[in-house]
Amino acid sequence: MHFDRERCVRAVQSKDARFDGWFFTAVLTTRIYCRPSCPVVPPKAENMTFHPSAAACQQAGFRACKRCRPDTSPGSPEWNQRADLVARAMRLISDGVVDREGVPGLAARLGYSTRQVERQLLTELGAGPLALARAQRAQTARILVETTALPMAEIAFAAGFSSIRTFNDTVREVFALAPSELRARAPRRQTAGTPGVLSLRLPFRAPLNPDNLFGHLAATAVPGVEEWRDGAYRRTLRLPYGHGIVALTPKPDHIACRLVLSDLRDLTVAGSRCRRLLDLDADPVAVDEQLRTDPVLLPLVDKAPGRRVPRTVDGAEFAVRAVLGQQVSTAAARTHAARLVTAYGAPIDDPEGGLTHLFPAPEALAEVDPETLAMPRTRRATFTTLVGRLADGTLHLGVESDWAEARARLLALPGFGPWTADVIAMRALGDPDAFLATDLGIRRAAQELGLPATPSALTARAAAWRPWRAYAVQYLWATDSHPINFLPV
Image (cartoon, rainbow, N blue to C red; front, side, top):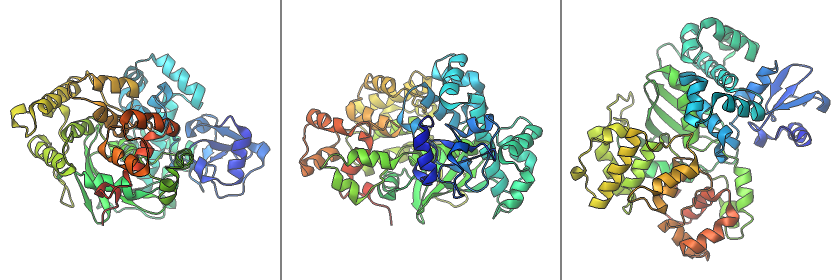
């Protein structure tokens, strides 16, 4: 979008928050870059230049605005609605892969050469993987500086910097303030008595309807791993350097996120996965505008706009749970999963009580005796085949997965039909166009609304909803009185 100068200027002059994260405005006279909705008086059009990423602005010598804090804007929805090389690379960078494995590790996961990945990112985003990861490290450092009382040396290494000097230089360059000055300007700071505990604000593009989002997560919560308590969805997280516990509470203009981490180096990854779980980088206006063109969906969208797709923090975990939920009720699926968690999940300590385990890793589930599973023999075979492929690495369901390829691999497994493959594509892989034509709830809703009832006819009818059929699923499900559609009391 940053190439459409006229449209960008209009967005900046109208302070349109919808475009936050789509592009960044760099002001030639002040050498500052802002989000489109910056509250200050807009600069003259001739003094504006536009960049596709904060990293590109920093590469060009601009520093972040202290008023609108462009580094905290929602991520571009482009990376969640595309499955090409650049989108998959951006999802991996957000997941901290460059910090942990370097650019060669990023390229290896994508199946391309390092040179090809760097060239594609530079062409589209104006910055290579190292610059994009550096911008992310700067934001992580800012969060730690402003919300904890940790010594700066600990913050530097927790944020992923190789040295304290690099940390200091980067913070000064990006924010035009020394780390100590950032801390002095922060309105509130946690005390030293709460190490590893962080309170964050996760921004989103309005509108956001929390009913089906949190309703789905709470209604399907696995005891010991997830719970709904005091208006917050809480769950455990398996992270690269340790584990964490997150509590997510819907607020009118943000999601309140409270993180307890065993290792602060996991902050960036935890935040990224929470955003992905709640689909916070979506563009609900674009989605709803498309779905409103169908007269059947129009009243559903107008009644409760801004529905998101509830996703997951771990693709392998969700795939296992999808198999456990085949042809059984939500309660039965939770019971099956809870038994596996108790027997094979890694135990953790929850300071607030209630959560007891991490969901078992595929390697642990590969050791399960199929005869101990209280399910039909054919589903036992499906379960053991899935966890075996996940454990040995022949099947990978991560943020870098190619949606079409992963779906084809799933359908090749015994016991995997269209429903299981599509629900995994929708919630684990993040495909915004996944459609559950064979789902019982969808077929009931279609019958009530006068839509075609057979899967093939309904799929043909749903072609007009592309590329947002996963969001259409949320609106169709919402016609039912199932608990997944209601914010828990």
